[in-house]
Length: 306
Image 1 (spheres, one colour):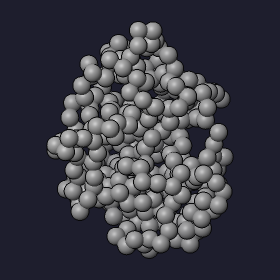
Image 2: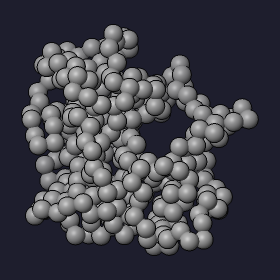
Image 3: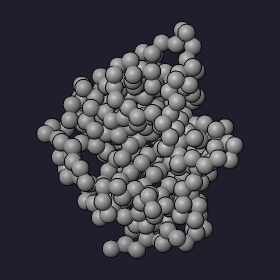
Image 4: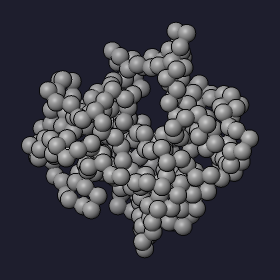
């Protein structure tokens, strides 16, 4: 059994500030249905399709890779994907995405986190998705001293989970905006949010070895956020499926892995060296170096693509 660094101890290293989430890879039960959903409901473009696999995104590097396998089902009470978050470049593009969901009568939950505007939904196989844009001009939130606190720009308090004013958001649309337009090329995966079995254990991996900065750990909410370069979070961690939750069985739909994209080879090599020194098993695959966190969530380390 490997002993990872204690996440409460400040590390002498920090992941490269330009590190970002690249793409999300999902195992799906019905590729045709999923492709239809992501193209029609979310505006993704089909980049390629080969047999039981397909890649989608905004016209550049893949944002989503789907792999179909037979006889799969959705499991509850296990680790894995809580949601992956699609980051739009502005409110206008988020408004287009939300308006499209309402036009197609797809259930979603518009939410105002003050410093971000967002809506949440599930794909047809139950994979959680967040669609959001940044709105720091409206206020900010902090994870400090074990507490989560949100303040509006006037200093007033918010719980950070208010209903989004959809009518106000939709005013950002223009008369000639088409709801069936593809997502803009600036769209990317903004962050991942994972179910884990134990937060300190997960922090030891993501913070103590990989080198993401710890933005805060709120024990009351059973969650923690980590990031690169001071971003509010590139990865969220929670134990909302239960402390000690097992990994999903082999026949589960859901997360295969997600990629962590490094700005240059040196930044990547530094992390790979720490992974090796910690004795963490890894395998080279076409997409990069695959390893698993202690909750068996797949992570691929690689150079930034495109």
